[in-house]
Amino acid sequence: MCGIVGYVGPNSSIDVLLRGLSRLEYRGYDSAGVAVIGTDAHLRTRKHAGKLKVLLDELKASPIQDGQTGIGHTRWATHGGPTDGNAHPHLGDAGKLALIHNGIIENFASLKEELLLDGETFTSETDSEVVAIMAGRAYRETGDLTRAMREVVARLEGAFTLLIVHEDRPGEVVGARRNSPLVIGLGDGENFLGSDVAAFVEFTRRAVEIGQDQIVTIRPDSVEVTDFDGNPVETREYEIAWDASASEKGGWSSFMRKEISEEPDAVANTLRGRVHEGEVLLPELGVLDDAVLASLDRIVIIGCGTAAYAGMLGTYAIESWARIPVEVELSHEFRYRNPVINERTLVVSISQSGETMDTLMAVKYARGEGARTLSICNTQGSSIPRESEAVLYTHAGPEVAVASTKAFVAQVTALYLLGLHLASVRGTLSADEITASINELLAIPGKLADVLIASADIGQLAGWMADTRSVLFLGRNVGFPVALEGALKLKELAYIHAEGFAAGELKHGPIALIEPGQIVFVIVPSPRDPNSLHPKVVSNIQEIRARGARVIAIAEKGDAAVLPFADEVIPIPLAAPMFEPLLAVVPLHIFALELATAKGLDVDQPRNLAKSVTVE
Ligand code: AGP
Image 1 (cartoon, rainbow, N blue to C red):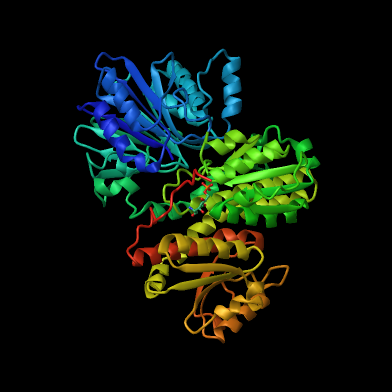
Image 2 (image 1 turned 30 degrees about the vertical axis):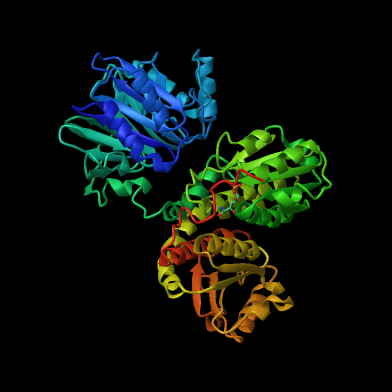
């Protein structure tokens, strides 16, 4: 997620902006920049790909005129790779206006087309520059920065936090937000704007939230907030509860806890701009056009660890919806087993980092064998997308904790979008069936938010189990990958033996592991499951309870059949069976986090592990 800072006041804006941006580094980014109205009333910008230090060194080597009005930005690339040219701020009105942006402008292509036809030129690949040009034109027409912002936001679709400054308006920063955070910091003779309070908490603890579809104009001695039509709105001031040191993680105790809390947004942002009026829109597939997709006779999904488990869910969904054979393989196994693949095989690689060497080498191998290649990745411009013919980016935002959480739900979301698109292209689902599944996906972020609330006491459950030495996870059909993911999280974080099994496999050996007190999580299928696997899994629970297991069931809210047989039941909201894994996985992420926390372990940097395994 991008970091945003704005400042007006008597002090050096460069100093305030850079200190604010450094507090936002935890959000993850790949370029940084500032725009300042100098005391000579000229606007100057400096921006660079890379970390904030690159920008700092550049400003030290060749300083720019400082002033008391400025905006600063750290960019997490979405449209356009992490380059100097794509870094923010972007300029309008012949370089007199600067803009920074966090979010995704869904209709930027049509807006850009309009501007190009009207003679405008662009220097970047970003959606943000389109808005900067629009803002410059609007300012030239209105001569008023706030009105210019009003005109611009009226034409935008998607998610955005915007800040603009203009050299004709020193002492003024105008911001706007829709589906993306922006907060005001109130100072004494100075005011601040930030993507979160970390941007200014070292200068002031007084903050004001800005609501949806609102515009704010800050000056050193005034703050005005209106709706998008210019009507003043009520605001509420509050005291920031934590200090600058906690701001490293936006107030969260760990990146992992922060990233689990972002799982609803990870799904929402991955869907954003890709579903419209009952259709899936994936223009990013590029050369993998409908003809190519219709010609495929097989799909192989490759990945490692959590990414592979997301891929497993993709196999269930895509094969069921698009009626094409789909299998998932661990990248490092696929690469060396001499698989039969050709131009009618689509190899889909899943990777949060886009740098996992096992997966990168497998993609290179697949291309060498003539297969079509698509990557699903969370990191713009990384190696695996560059090696693939096309990429579907998951917009989960930077995932800093080694244990992957929000990337998993985003990867599954992207795979489900791919499956529905394939079903549409291949005519294997009706328009109504596709619409119904899209609606299920659109409902997931809200249901995930409910799961987060309902999982509040998992910490207590984990505390009781802090000394356990072994936990098993059972799941069936789409619950099986969830069981594997839950086991992996526990291994990674709590360093205890954990194993996931297909529930149907229990009687073929694993049940010998069951002894009194053995903790077993069971992901229970929906009682509405068309395969009617629910009674089979309830029988599994009875079998292991009869042998002394302690059963924690993840079950659909209201599933009364489970209650008599489980020691604990963690309810999840109702969803169509294929979509329940997106909900069932979150309590397992939380359980692993809480058990590791109870053991006093480092949940962000577990021992022996790296966030991206860049060696084979
Ligand atoms: C997941 O929690 C682990 N950190 C690990 O299994 C990870 O999913 C795997 O290394 C793949 O990483 P990638 O998604 O960046 O390719």
